[in-house]
Length: 99
Image (cartoon, rainbow, N blue to C red):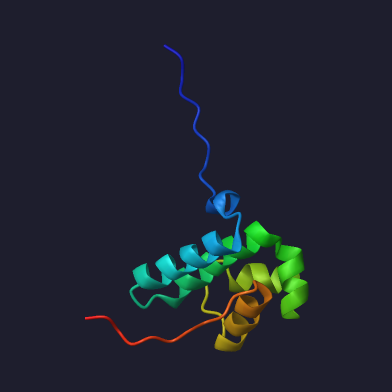
C-alpha cells in the first residue's frame, strides 16, 4: 500500500485578485467573533499573497515587524492595522449590524 502525500494548505496561494482578498478579509472579520488576532492573521495571509516586503514598505514598517504583527500571536495596534489595510489597497467600512 502506498502512502498518501499531503501538503500544508496555504490560503495565501489562493488569494489572487483584490476582490478575493477583500472577500477573504470580510469573511474572516465576520467569523472572528471579536478575536482581533484572528483578523490580524487574515491580514497576514493577504500580505503574504501580495508580497510581504512590498506591503511592509508601503505601510512604512519593517518586514520583520510586519510578520510579527500579523502572525496571529499578538494583538497589533489599530494604527498598524490601518497602515496595513491601506498598504493592501483596501478600505475599512462601517455598517449597521444586520439582525
